Each structure stands twice: as C-alpha cells, then as structure tokens.
Length: 355
Length: 181
Ligand SMILES: [Zn+2]
Ligand SMILES: [Zn+2]
Image 1 (cartoon, chains in turn yellow, cyan):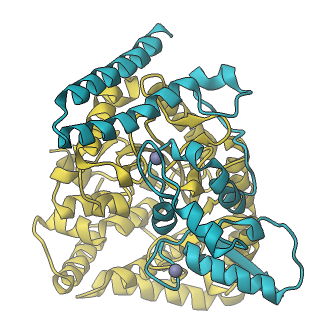
Image 2 (cartoon, rainbow over the protein chains, first blue to last red):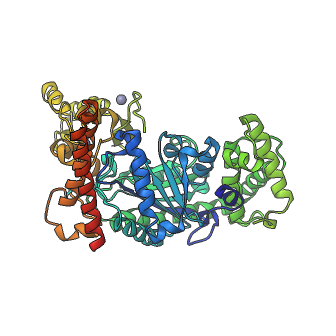
Image 3 (cartoon, rainbow over the protein chains, first blue to last red):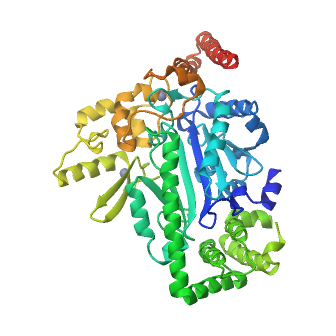
C-alpha cells in the first residue's frame, strides 16, 4: 500500500526550500471543475456519484499527468488513513468526512492532488514549498489543460467554470500562501496586518485551530473573489501582498533580537526544552512550541536543528501521523504520551540523522 | 462554513469596516437579509453598492416566495433549496436561475463576467453569453437521467430504453468531437 511510502517520507512542500521559505511555508493553487453531464456532487444520486468517479478515473488515465498519479478510493480507506491525508494537506477535511464514492489521485512528490467528488466533481490542487506561485500556476495550468482535453468541463461564456457554490464560479481558483508569522504575533501587530488584508478582500485564517485562534502562528492568506478577474490578476493579488508581510515579519524579528534578545532566547530555549523532555504533550502545545523553536532556528538561537526538521515535526506530531507510525489507534491521552515519546526520541537521535 | 447565528450554511461573507475596527460576518441567506436590512435602516445612505440588490433583500415576501418556487428543469432543484443549502444542483442552474443569481453573484464578486481562462474548445465563441452548445447538450443529459428514473418507476421500460440510447448518442458525439481535435 502507498501509505508505507507516505509514512516514511514527507511532502515536497515541507522541505523548507524555495524562495522566502523562512517565512513562507508553502504556496498553493486550487481549481474547482465540474462535468457538464452530471448534477453537482451534493445533488447527485449515489449511482451518479459512482459514475462521475469512474468517468473521471478512466479519463485521467488517458492523460500523461494522470498516469503518473496514484489513485486512492477514499470510501474504501479507514478513517485514520483519510485523516492522515488531511494532515498531509492532500485532501480537505470535508472530503475526508464526506460519504459516498470519492477519491484522490496524488503524485509521489505530493505536489499535485486531484480530488474527485469533493464539493465539486474535480478539485485540482498544486502545492509547493516556499513562495513559488508562478511555478505552481504553470504546473496546475498544464494539468488543467491536459484534463480539459478529455473531459467536458461545465463552462458558461458569461459565468466561466460552473461550480456548486457561486462563491467559486468563474475561474474556480483559490490561491493561497501559508505564512509563519511568530514575531508579528509576539509584537502584537498581527491584527493590524489582517485588518489591512481584509480591506483588499483577501481572506486570512489560522492553519491549525479554529477561526482566528491560530495555533503556532501559521496563517493562510487567500483570494476570496473568483469572478471578473483573470487568474493572473488573482494570483498577483495574493503575491503582491506577501513581500509586504515578509518585510513586516522580518522587521519584527529584528526588533525582537535587538530589543529583547535575552527574552526571545529564553522563550525559544524553554520551548525547545519542553519539546525534548515532556512526558505528555497535546497537539496544540506542540504546535505552539514548534513555532517558537522554528523562529529560534531562523534567528540562529538554536544549534543542530534545521527548518526542515521543524516543518516535518509539525506534520508528524499530528494525531493520524502518530497513530500510523505507531501502527495502532490511540485515544487523546495515549496520543499525548506517544507524541512526547516521539519528540524525545527524535531529538535524542540527533535531528539530522534521519530522512 | 456555518452561519454565525444558526446551523445553516453561511452564504454571505461580509466584512464591516467601522472606524478602525473590522468585523467579519458569516451569515446564511436569512440572517444576512435581516442584517443587511438593519444595516440599511441604520445608515441613511442608500447607494446601490451591490449589497442592497442581493437576493431576498428589499423584495416583498410574495416576490420572494415566487422566486423560491422556481425549479431547474434538469436537476429539479428549487431556488428555495439552493438558498437553504447554499449549493446549486447542476450546471444548468446558472442558466435556469441566471436572473435570480445575478444580484447574489454581484454581491459576492462585484463582477458579472468571467474574464479568465477558458477551455480550448470554447475559445472561439467568446461573444456568446450563453452555455456553449456542447455544454448545453451535455447538461440536458442530467434531465434525461431523471426522466429515466421516472419512467422506470412507471414501469415504462420502452421510454427508459429510448432515453438511454439518446444519452449514449450525446455522449458519443462529444467523445467523437473531442478526438477530432
Ligand atoms: Zn443563519
Ligand atoms: Zn439544475
């Protein structure tokens, strides 16, 4: 099974490479597409959903991209495996939790993922490490063009690509970048920054946790509008604001170093200390501490640890990853113990010893 | 996303900017209507900035219930069902409910015309403001499948068989055109 490979690797987007990867974790573009000859997923009968899945699956094998991808039937997977794919950002939580015929095709680098029967018949996602929207767009555009040659997309001259929800109609594009902004959080400037983003109709949400209560200072910026602008314009809308945010975050990091180096160093060291020695630790606390340590690594306050190690740990300490590694289902209490055990042994072994 | 005031799907994502303060609202159709009516009453300015023209806002109850009863001839969804779930039933809904969707789409996107990429096969027909012929034909298959189900229920297998053949013809025609390119 493919999971054996996934378990021992991490996606390309976690490698901590690519432009500005000290602050920009990843760049992602998603396209929503539907077949013209079927009702949207929410209104399709189970038989129609199965037909959509079979149709898309068989058509995708006719494309060169499709033949490179590994297909997984989500309905046939265990809950834990679906959860694992969510943590890996290869499928959405909604896609995991839905019922009925649905699937996902992913490439071995975990950059391309094609979700079948999510909210739309087809959702194409492309994910890269660092700030790399141009390359992501080029890649997803070529995937989309390959598929459009063998699949009748529902398209309207005026409304563009037709989607189940009118909020996605037109380009069907969602452009997002995931940013790590710990210094803006510590210096309490983050709300001000987000307010200015809302004014230019960009959406911000915390990557982990609910609503604005983000764990670990990871934030996702994305476009809200999808109609009446070209894909390039929508990509620029997000891309143009990123350098500004990077600049703010860098300045806040410099400020912390100059004005409160002792304090910052203390916070980072304590965070690292807890991660190395805790006997039980929640996912939320882990996220928060890893965020501090990640900043510490980038500020040169932590030796012997690479950003890619921290990125990997952010994913591998999540519930499904821990359980897949351990090979058994664990409740929250046991997960917290297992998470602490995993972290201790990871740091004991020496971070660069593996992978 | 869920409405902040009930369990329904949030259809309206409103960002309010008030004297240096930002409030984000995620509301279902009904609560958005209440909120927007309120907001309109609060501020005396009555500009046509999109929000005032949204579906359900500023329309009488009678007009609304008439709109709600409209049905897509392909997938059978009513406009009321769409308003409740926040999801359309099939691609044809964008044709069937074009007039009703217009204010809603204007409210969400501030624009009413796609300017982005288009499938290669549609690029030559940029001036039409309708479903391309091929898409139109294919969406009719959705209605035909519904008719098949009804025919089978009525044990009218002959009609069901003919419809199945018709569907196959339409799909084959598309595949034939596609492989010609
Ligand atoms: Zn509501
Ligand atoms: Zn319909």
